[in-house]
Length: 100
Image (tube, rainbow, N blue to C red; front, side, top):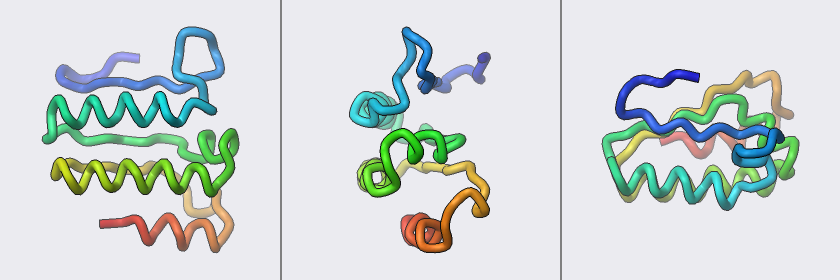
């Protein structure tokens, strides 16, 4: 996948050579390094349902919360691209609480 100049693509897939969907710590490390390198960079998390499915909702929520903490510290931006209907009402309410 081609991305615009200055963007850093972290691809998550069960295919060898990519970040595995159960490797939240590696994905998180890649995001944090990216934010430290360029605080003006935005983080876009597409299809978060995939990560929640493989890790459980609670682990995924902790993952997002940690990203949120780093975004606040670096004054960066994070966008989560999802469909509210993909989540249970309780899960969606918890995800909405992470909004800044």
